Length: 93
Image 1 (cartoon, rainbow, N blue to C red):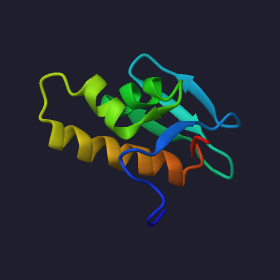
Image 2 (image 1 turned 180 degrees about the vertical axis):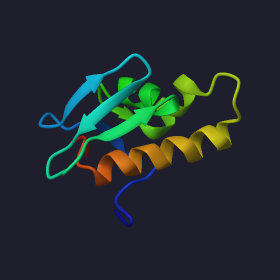
Image 3 (image 1 turned 135 degrees about the vertical axis):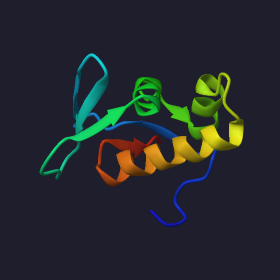
């Protein structure tokens, strides 16, 4: 994704991605995927936030509760990149 995203980049779920919630996780199937991506814990909170157009910073502020912002930001960025690489989210226009 080199150089496309900044902390101000606005993300949203790709309308063509499919997801299924389980009691403790979400299975996400982006376009061109052979198998679903399993996200848990913090990833579920990120996926829920992506229901609407949102920036990385907004997600971090929403879910940091009790964690350091730096650690939360690094985890959120990693989850966003995994979801982007899986074609489950897109940059909002």
